[in-house]
Length: 123
Image 1 (cartoon, one colour):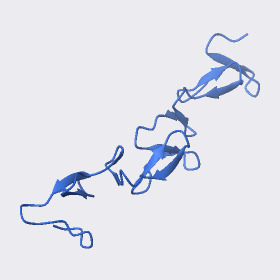
Image 2: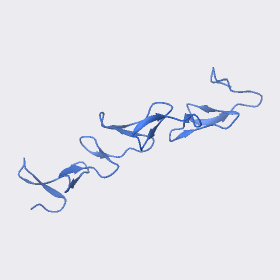
Image 3: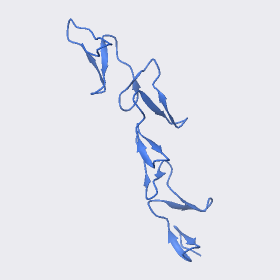
Image 4: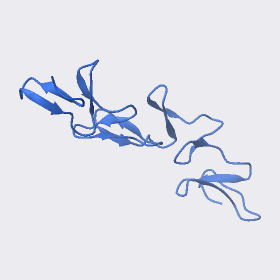
C-alpha cells in the first residue's frame, strides 16, 4: 500500500508521486491538476482573465480582438453591441463624445472643437 499522496505505478513497480503540481485522484485513478488549473504536459498552469487555456496548444491565449472569453460556453465570443470594445479585461463602451483608443485600451475625448472621425479613427 502506498503512502498518502502517492500511487502504485504498475510500469515502475513502485509507489510514486504525480509530477508538475498534479495530485492523484483516488476516484479517477489519474494524476490531475487542481480545479481551475490546466495540464501543459509538464506542469499545471492557471490562466488569468482575459486569457483562456487552449488544450491543443497547451497554453494560455488571448481571444482575438473585440472578443472576450465566455467561461460558461468555454469559447471566445464577440463583445455585445452595447459594449463593443475590449479593454483588456472585459467588454466596455465609451460615453458620448469620446472614442475607444485601441493602443491604450481606454476611452478618450477629442480636444475642444474637434470630433472623432470613425473612418480615419482620429480626432
